[in-house]
Length: 393
Image (cartoon, rainbow, N blue to C red; front, side, top):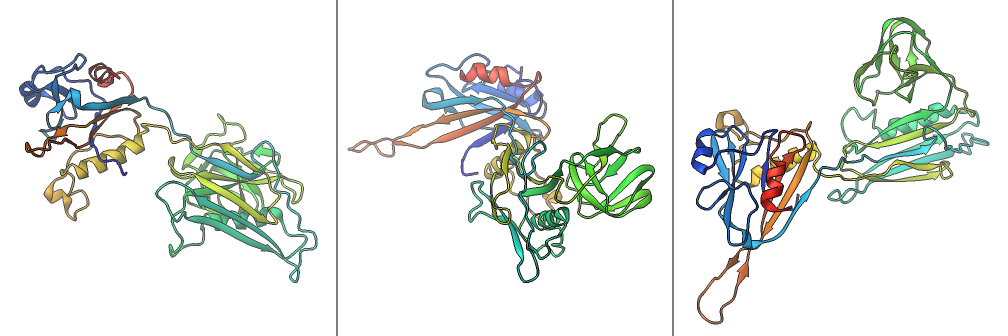
């Protein structure tokens, strides 16, 4: 990710209590980390001027470690406590409590069409020339149904009909919001991400053309009636689950809807926490309300990012080069300790050891930057406290 460093990721395990590197080699469980002085003795108190040390970790029964480092060469050290990322969410039109699409199809006809356009640009670093998800719908009737029109826009944004996979990868998902009155279903509802089929636990009646609200997002039933299986007009964008109607309120419901009266909106949610984007509304949507529901924040130390950091770190450390090889099981590959389900505090240790290339005059000194990143899980079982003490951060 543009930052060369030795990477150590601790599993949920305490700092070592082996007092020497020899004992560490013999006894340390997988993933355990220790900081040792040059003579091989364990360091558990603060490093001080003049001391030389190395960091070691047990991996696959072997020891991976840094070279011997000098405390005096450290020019920057810091600890960044875990901070949860915030995924960007932006609404166009109705945002769940207020806002309007400001749709007006008056005068629309085949000879005088009205156009509705949305562009969503990925502005995340490293994504130049900034991918775009866009939608463009032409309305040719003054009595066009507003939901059907918005549904076409959302389907284009989500590339629902891109069966051949020609469209670029999505960075946002689009969902419809509305303020119609809800009537909770009498049976539990099972939904599957990416599927148009919804299943009820028992027989219920939902006729074709009815709008349903699932976890606050709106779909139209295109194949229904009385039964336990119904087809939506678009693939469901939420998480796969069964909604227990006895413990929720209006999370699986039918919705009253009148075109031109019921407020509609489009909610755009970044698919990855590190992504952020810019929304542009044009033509017949130029007056639509655009609301930042959740402003993007990168955060620090969330599990998925540490997983990727460890993969990159171990690859460039020279012990992960088989990770992408065919038949890698035949060659073997290193154990990875990062977990997407954990959160981490991050330690950054930067050193600038001096090199004297020649003794002849004029003497000069050359410095080569070395960087170390240690990720320690938050919680009770972690080397976090010991590392804070040792490095004084």
